[in-house]
Image 1 (spheres, rainbow, N blue to C red):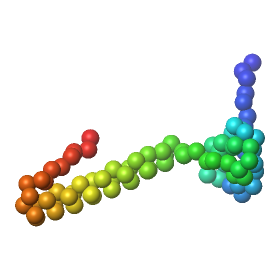
Image 2 (image 1 turned 180 degrees about the vertical axis):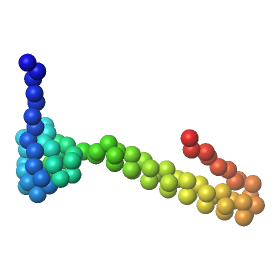
Image 3 (image 1 turned 60 degrees about the vertical axis):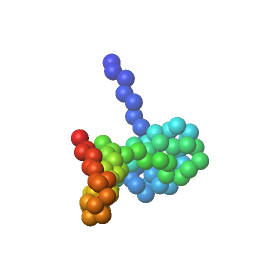
Image 4 (image 1 turned 90 degrees about the horizontal axis):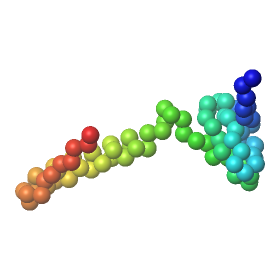
Length: 89
């Protein structure tokens, strides 16, 4: 017989009102994400879903590309010979 592990679960309203035990893990069924609790913070700390895991990194790469393009354009306009570009892989 296989062992089954079941976690507490609830919708977002229930999760936000719940203060779990230290290191307790629950599931927010509205956000479809796992929440880690510290024993004192109501609502705990939701973890990113796989589909959102890289959103901050994608934003940072976009901001870097925009800043790099602006620098290259400004350097070329100034004719200071400092224009360079970094290709992101």
